[in-house]
Image (cartoon, rainbow, N blue to C red; front, side):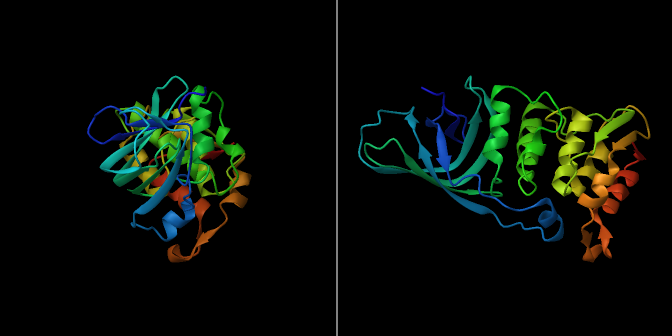
Length: 263
């Protein structure tokens, strides 16, 4: 039998209630990094999941159909060895367990809808941490926000400090910077190593440059294949005076004391 890939527990430190293999209806978010900058939404989302192949850990499974009002809960993403890779906070969670069925239905509120592509991104982490840069480039443009979501969750779980240290010289592989999310994926690899995270937005990047420890007062960022970003980040922001996203990113880097050099 394949090991469970997800688990559910109440948000009180108690043991997990259930584990399962597959689910539908969770990784459904479609907000792009552009959307988050141009039209940010503070509205929470709601998910309705079908959990498949559920292994009940709290009691025997042969019982009547019932609904459990869980309140605040945590959906955990598991590695192949059962280790928790990351988790998502849920609130108002309601679990419906049909009698004699291996499946269940979970409805809950979430801060933001987990991104489409998130399941694929988590699968890259299940065996081991990505060892090569640009693993995220296998996701199509429009789904790379999922990589940022996953690496952010992993980073905040693994590290006590939210931002990685800035080396004296940072080597940015810009060969796949096809949109704004791709830039943050590439920066995560450059600053924190393959699978690393430093920002999911321009505001995050400004905070990283403000608070991250650094090896030199003015780090140098060697941006290789900058010409790719000239095309990939050519979209303009009307509210900023029709400034290109590339220029906004360069302004944030300069404002954060980083010298950008074309490689």
